[in-house]
Length: 226
Image (tube, rainbow, N blue to C red; front, side, top):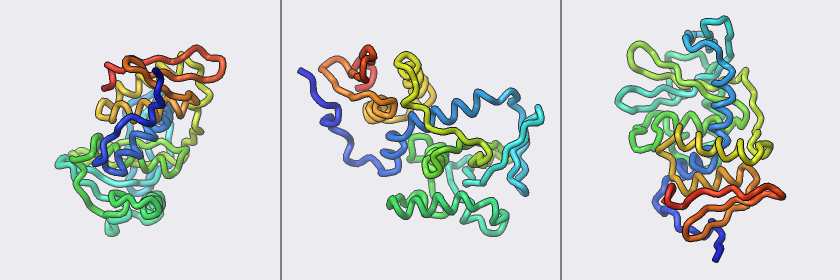
């Protein structure tokens, strides 16, 4: 007997921001992979005064500063760091704050907060920030003092390509997503990823099945995700 996957029980106590993270993770991951795959160099310098992210091969990107994460997993949004940052570089963070106010996401509207309870810590907040913009990837800039600056790469524009992926590429991309973000809520994220790629999702006692037009079904074993 087949049942719609949407009838599966999900954790009632999941934070709203984590639910959004899981629901959007496939699109986030695709955007991040496509950006990082284009980079030829790995060495970089981030110019905090101008927001320029410069790689050793001469490629540069304009960015907006989202926030910083300390080694103790404390996060500060850029809009809350009023004394040290050029306000022109915090416009993006303020837009994310407005997004949080609209969605009722306290983590996006609280200036300083602990993030050790979030599945991917600072990456969760930076990823959600990229959701607010839809087309820009984010980048983590490690500082010598152990603090990590997260920036939105505004000069890189990557439209959502999930529905344009063929069946085999989509399946591999979903598998790669789980390898990169092992902390994601598996079943919720799997359902959202398959739907983002245009598949109607069903499950049996042993399998999760995605169907899309004339494509062969996309099948995952339930045991991998339960």
